[in-house]
Structures are given as structure tokens and as C-alpha cells.
Amino acid sequence: MTSEQPMIALHGVTRRYDDGPPALDDVSLTVSAGECVAVLGPSGSGKSTLLNLVAGLDRPDSGTVTVAGTRLETLGEAAAARFRRAHVGLVFQFFNLLDDLTVLDNVLLPAHLAGAARRPAREHAARLLDSLGIARHADAYPGRLSGGERQRVAVARALINRPALLLADEPTGALDTVAGQDVRHLITNLHATGQTIVLVTHDLRLAADCATRTIGMRDGRVSAVSPAGSPAASAMPGSAGVTV
Ligand code: ADP
Image 1 (cartoon, protein in one colour):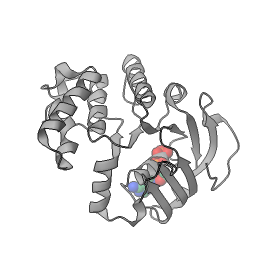
Image 2 (image 1 turned 135 degrees about the vertical axis):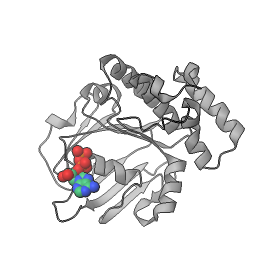
Image 3 (image 1 turned 45 degrees about the vertical axis):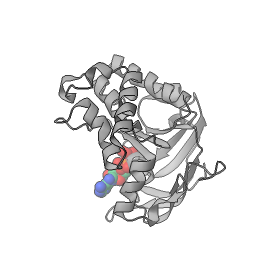
């Protein structure tokens, strides 16, 4: 990827499940390196489908999905998995940690899968745990941690392979008010360090705090785009196939 290329470029992307209406309908958008983009919209509007395509977890029926210079729709499953391990960190609403691995081993797992050398990976994991304020839990099992702490572990795991892109699906959705605030700060700070982030969220405060841009989705289409501080969900009438 050259510095002029966007981190993410979707062109005319349509994804249809079964015989229903398209979950994504001719969506085009770009995200530049260093942006934090919040994707907002009602349930069923296509937000997770969009995130899955950008993560290389799914493929469009038509259109192109380019992330970090790679055309994802051309990759087979194994190549897509390799791409994800190298370039994408994923954070989920319910953390998706492995309960029978310690915190440290959860964080190290993507590094092992990517074939990273053991010692530098452990050193990097220790630094991440430290910077995220959870170093004291390195040998604990996730079940002993609070929701906010588990999400911090999940963020450390997402960052272990130094991804160009961090994707988060409702990262504060399962957290209480205090832990939600904590994770909002964490994501905002990550963005301040230059991390490119795309998050799907219903958390308007997260969007307002972190996002340089919000994208509203409705019925599989981009319905609105706003700069930071003015969530798109309530802005601008819908238009299909907008290039953002
Ligand atoms: P959101 O994340 O905004 O809630 P989704 O992307 O999950 O929306 O879903 C968009 C549409 O696609 C919805 O109508 C949903 O029911 C449908 N959909 C999502 N995943 C599947 C699937 N695996 N099989 C069939 N339909 C699906």
C-alpha cells in the first residue's frame, strides 16, 4: 500500500443472503489511514455485514473490497485468514476470549498463529498488557476478570500483530457505564496514537469521542455521512451507492 492509497476502499459492494433483500446494496466508501470511523444505524441495516467484508470474513456478491492494498474479494479462505492475521485486529461485543487460556496466552494466540518469534511476541504482549493497565492479570483466566478488563484483553489481542486496521463491533455494547467509559477512553487514546479504526456501535458517546467521521447505514445503504461530533444517524437523507 502506498501512502496515497486509502486504508479501505469499497466500490459498488453488494452482499445478499439467500433470497432476501441485499444486506449491503451497492455500497462505496473509502477510509483513510489514521481515521476513526463509526458506523451507525438500526439493527439489520448492514453494519456487521460491512465489517465482516472489510475483515475478509465474508465476500461480496459483487463489487470490490480493498484493504491495506489487498483485493479481499479475490482471496480464498486461507489467504483471507493470513491477511487478517497480518493486517486486521478484531474486537467483539462479547470479547470472544478463550476461557481455558490465560490472559497472556489469549493475547499471544494471534502472534503464534502468524508464526511470530516467541520471545519478541511475549515482550510485546507484556508491553501491551502494561499499557492497557492489566499486566497484573497476565496469568489469570478471563473468567476471573470484569467485563471492562476482558475487553482490554481483547484489545491487546487485537493489537498483538500490529494491525494496520482495528475493527470493533459494538465494543462497549456489553459493558456497564463505568467500564464503557473506560473502553471509550482506551479506543480514543488508540486513535490518538495513529491507529486506523472502524467501529460499529450504538454508543453515540463513543462515536462523538473517538470518530473523525460517522457513517449512517439504513437498509444496506450508506444513508448519511458526518464529520466528528455530529452522528450521522440523524443527518442527511438517504442515497444509494454514495462514494464517501
Ligand atoms: P446490523 O449489523 O446492522 O444489525 P447485519 O449486517 O447483521 O445488520 O444484517 C443485515 C441484514 O442481513 C439483516 O436483514 C439480517 O437479517 C441479514 N443477515 C445477516 N447475516 C445473515 C446470515 N448469515 N444469513 C442470512 N441473513 C443474514
